[in-house]
Amino acid sequence: MVKVLGILGSPHAQGNTVLLLDAVLEGAAAEGAETEKVELAKLDLRFCIGCGRCYAAGSCIHDDGVAAVQRRMVDADGVVLASPNYMHSVTAQMKAFMDRCSLHVHCFLLTGKYGAGVATAGGGGEERVAGFENEFLRLCGAQTVGIAAALAAGPAALRDQEAALAGGRDLGADLVAAIRERRQYPDQAEEHAAFAGRMKQLVARMAEHAPFQYEYWEKMGWL
Image (cartoon, rainbow, N blue to C red; front, side, top):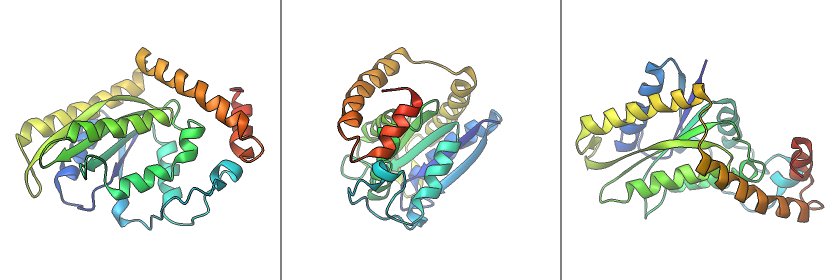
């Protein structure tokens, strides 16, 4: 069974972004995927303090709701990140979650997974935000299949809503197809390889201070 996890970064459980995210999850479910949605605004979510414990020990200094979401993300086959445009970026909730996933970036913990970005905006920039979400997923090792982005027409209403929701459902279906096909994206493979080359140098240089990530890279045969 294909598993797709949607992570909602909006503080509004009934807003524009959730409309579009739900459409993506509906499209995935229609193709037989098991779907789940997590609302970051409902979590106890503390800020990363840059202490480096995750690199050193493999666990975070904070005991809050983030670890459970991270486990679900790693267990899923597909991950969909969804956020409205706040100041040309994702919400504070989504950014805080991303910051807490630094070990996922350093150790490419989403390798073999597929993802997609979802964003809405009142006055533009929604595609930029969705693209940023996809960039984060690729930094974690995932391959991304596309975005769903839409402008708002008002509270819980999208411009050209039927077309926007249809596009979201199509993205969800394509995400499931990519997972089943084990689809490959040569341009993203080049991006991953270039980033891994830079990370290899960092991991080797920080081995004494970050033994967990060094041992993980060694176990994976990447050193």
